[in-house]
Image (cartoon, rainbow, N blue to C red; front, top):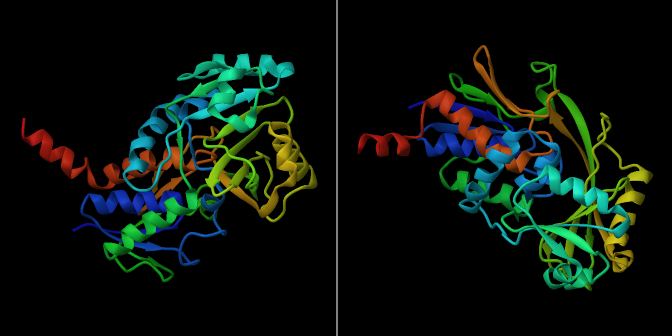
Length: 325
């Protein structure tokens, strides 16, 4: 039996461990922090499974592999499929038109249709786009569900060194930069707020030339607001400008957000290669899965499958099916 030690218990490491275990490999999972948490950028993600929206400023692999991620996650954790709503104020109609040209899988919606989909948005937006097939998940629950599933199979997250003789799969993000010098950190800043008087049932993206926003419902009146993309290596603080812009954009979406309670402020660095696409690479005896950028939950399943197939060959189930024909 093949033996692997996966380093890093963020979304990349957990997905890789899950795919290796599904193929019958013996896996140990190692993270000095002992498991998922606020120390990793996976913890602060939006959790939007939105490949069609993301295609607006991403390459085709994000669209293709992101669609496959919808089914992968639905088998592993709770996924809410209520689509994504993209809106813009009348003065920003050109931004909405540009977004429509650069994306797929949407239908135009009028102000009345927006109000029907999300009554608390009212009719303040004259037009929008509805991406009906998109979905979202709670990243923290997803990480816990993967962790619990692996632990139930005898593969808990460990904080010790990998066992001798195991093949190393490094999924440690920016911690692997010494081996992967092309990696850079892209800072993201986000807020978790509670606004129990408001009800949004799906992710909403507000297009704006200066302060674009997405807001993702977490349930019970809790929402995640995000997120900036700053080419900076400072992961330790949120800037006053980012805080102001996130809150101003939420207020523009609905003035009732002015009364929201700020529950959490999160900042971290997303690992990214120059082309902003992830890679599975091998250096000596170590396989690296890295560079998920802002598409961690969209692309981690595909990268995990790619790594598992590179290390073990095609999935055993697929091999068995092929042998039947």
